[in-house]
Length: 172
Image (cartoon, rainbow, N blue to C red):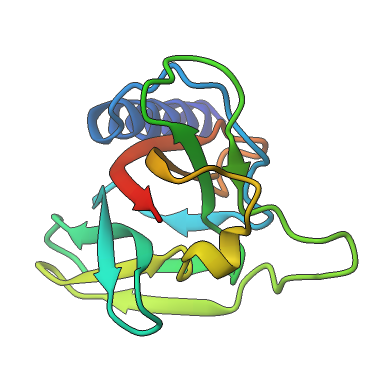
């Protein structure tokens, strides 16, 4: 029992340190959290980015990049709705997002749709979708926006969100 408690504390502390080390320490308040969790080992290093996409024009994809920094093969499991995407006005330091990728009430997601085997030194991208003006709608004025991504680890139960400032995008 003591070993189990020690392991639980070590995993929790590692996730906390990993979350703090990879996160930019955003003080922006969260938007709608991700629908599904992400199962991953503490040896998978996480980093955010935004990929520009040419089709459809002026599109972009938020990505959380995973790298296996360990010496053993690891697994990662996630669903189709595991990444929350929040847009904040470029000058925002607090407050709720100007937009987030919440799903309509009549939609659903598989909680674990993908299970990946990640050998040592390998990497993969957890894509948060593809967005553009048509997807976001006209509720936001043209301009610069901060993109914040969030995932919820599957352990421990009710784990805190890990948030990342992924960069900025420009809406036409």
